[in-house]
Image (cartoon, rainbow, N blue to C red):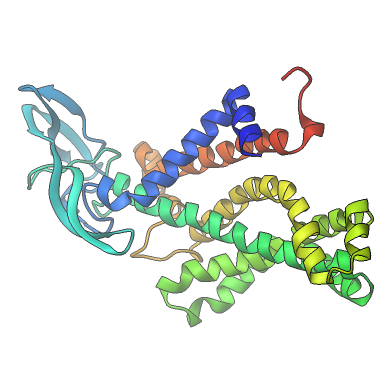
Length: 350
């Protein structure tokens, strides 16, 4: 499986590029405190809607241009001619905990105060968009992985038991999946989140969204796994296991369910974008991640002001570009994985 997967990705440049892009995105999210020059909550009301700072080569070093505010009403900044401050590499900055555990102060790059570096500009309160984008990736991308894991686990277990046991267990499980699939997902998602929002602190919102999305998403996986188990349980190797007297639990978890993993790998990859978009929709509507945390959907929700479009503060829409790239990358990777794990989808001569 591993060799086929690598060969399939190498034969399909789109899948390989998508895999590399996703690795870079998840790596950036994992090391966000180190890569970011500051913390996401750091505000500077004197530099609201600051444009991305230009990088220049000066005096043999990479430097950041300095700007002055020309018109506060339109947040117009102009670079100060001939003035720049050098970037400091692997320098000390605001304290953080790497991976949430290791206390550290070293950042990849900073600038000496009072100068600032805004690679992607600043928002309405002068917070660094690049820093918030990195920290937001941890939540937006993490929700997809955790949610798909729970969905796959529920769908695999319930669908496998329903297909193998049959009878009343199969009927009960399928009626439950039909009910969940018949309910409009977006409206149920909004209703549950709105009803439970007052009962959870903001730091528990991440877990709440994951649980809600997982509770709504396992039904489709369970139905497909049930169908696969129904087709597999009459195969000769399953009949032989029954004749040898193996227990039903051993047959189910050792012989039946492992043969559905190829489907689950593809389905999980293609399902991650749904969780990312679900979190983005909730946060965009104000029902998802709350301040002081950061997510891509929350950042897009804060960019709804008409002033942003009228004055062309394009850098505040970069979370939308990040969501689009991530969704496309997962879809292309899912196609490549499908070709790798299912011979029926392999192209002749490829």
